[in-house]
Amino acid sequence: MSDTVAPLGGAAPALRPTAPAEPTHPAWPAVLSLSLGVFGLVTAEFLPVSLLTPIAADLGVSNGGAGQAVTATAIVAAFAGPAIVIGTARIDRRIVVWSLSLLLVLSNLLAAAADHIAILIGARVALGIALGGFWSLAAALTLRLVPARLMPRAMSIIFTGVSAATVTAAPLGAFLGDLWGWRPTFLAASLLGAAALATQLATMPRLPPADAPGLGTFALVLRRPAIRIGLLTVLLVIAGHFAGFTYVRPFLETVPRFDVATISLVLLAFGIGGFFGNLAGGAVAERSPRRAVALGSLALSLAVFALLAFGAVGPVAFAATALWGFAFGAFPVGIQSWTTRSAPDHAESAGALLVTTFQIAIASGAVAGGLLVNGFGAGGAIALCAVATLAGGLTMLLGARAHEA
Image 1 (cartoon, rainbow, N blue to C red):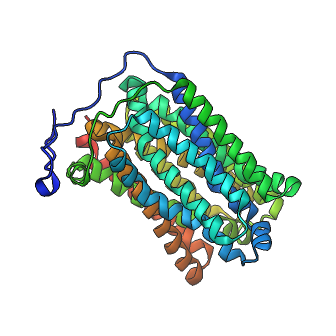
Image 2 (image 1 turned 30 degrees about the vertical axis):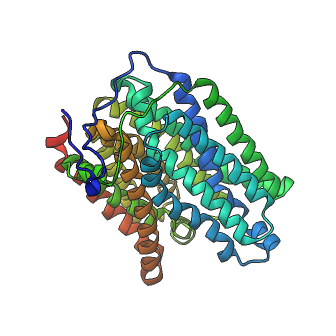
Image 3 (image 1 turned 135 degrees about the vertical axis):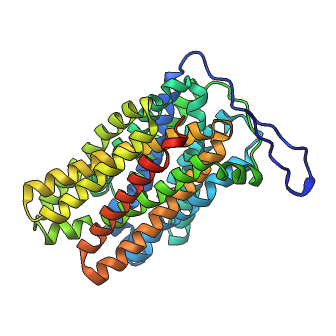
């Protein structure tokens, strides 16, 4: 089945894109190179969180001002996804991947050399472009590197890079920042990006463009009910997650009354849970992406409701937070698989919409959580997380049943 994309302004003939030919053999080394690239991107994204105080002191700005280095990356990534998909439509996808990895290296080098907050923000803008572009292309690239039946497994491998970075980036950044200083830590991140680029240069096969996406393609993809259900699920689950998780530390400090050392262990358990949840989500998504998304969302909601009801009991709070990490780790693999299978002929455009929706959900969730924390304390944000993720899980479980095939 193919769809006709109406040209904008009548400037070009209508296109009848089709899904690219399915590979007969999986290119696992190339998939691993993408995982390494994701590890480098997410590590770089999280570095300012663990280095905020020395960065602010060195550049002569407040912690809030230095924190805009994180905000800039997220905002730019939301717009970069669609822009990269459209702007590089006729370029071999491996060249695009190489360029984004090179941009990762250059952004870390520029951050290490920054002597003014504006230069640091510029470096983080470059990282946002690389991040948004890479995530927009990830699922579509995977679909061309492995047979469709192995796509969830391949996405699980790629998301292992995210889980590893989530577990290690912040504590390792803090350790290296204390040992070497924040500038050498960014230099180390640039070396990690260079290693990813070298691996991609060695393993990525030629991937000629199989589609010519434009603004009309995004409209076409959005007309598909399965895509709309997936994006609504993302808005609910991701906004709910970030509304709650952004303020999980105040909750753990005030309800179970954990000290800083215990909170660090709890957050480590969250990250380790996410690593294994990623693997479990990939295994379930091979059979049913809908169930992987729904079960991950509902398990997340269950964990957060347990925190609300029994969070004052230390072992329950610890276990519930670990389950939260496990459930959240399963979600991205499932939703990427669902989105790609819902639009295999426009996988890059669907991926770009998914990235933009993720970023909007992250920002809106953090804002909503902040308002609730100010009004009701940390428990208010946790309650929003529980309700929103429950709604997201039910949306996918019940609303998408007719569209799974």
